[in-house]
Amino acid sequence: MTTWQAVNPDFADLVPAVVLSMPAAQHLGFEFTRVDTGAVELVQPHRRELTQHDGYFQAGVLGALADFAAGSAAGTLLPPGWVNMTIDFTVKILAPAKGPTVLARGRVIKPGALITIAAADLFTGDEHETLCATALVTMRNIRLAQQ
Image (tube, rainbow, N blue to C red; front, side):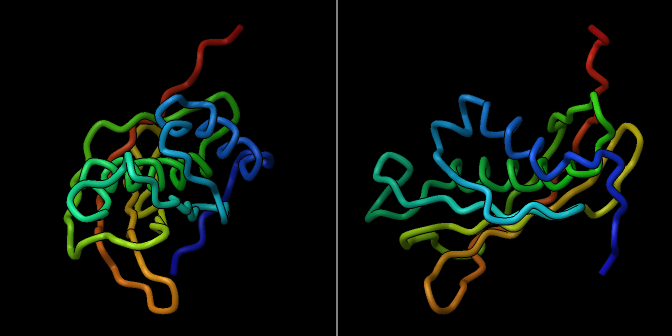
């Protein structure tokens, strides 16, 4: 397992604050349960409006969770004054996602100055996790304008 070096000492507070300020994240209602250098975990509670047939989480919701998890993991490695935005992602649904929560584990694959590659795995289940989706995400790192 690769260990990355964070350049922003405040990343563990900053990443959740920035992500959870986004309207799309607020609508989904997930929470961060882990924020480490190059890795995060999000937990998405089941809500009827996020489902399709028979209470299964809708595929677009799974894609959004994967994107937020991977992007957040990538965000832990950004310097102060930088953010990232998705430029490409691929999600593979591997099993139906049904249960009280979905756990999204994001991790950095290859960081870079302008482009970071990250991934996310999504799991459902209480006692036994079931891998329900996996994603590969490409992030563009952007320096915010100086104020």
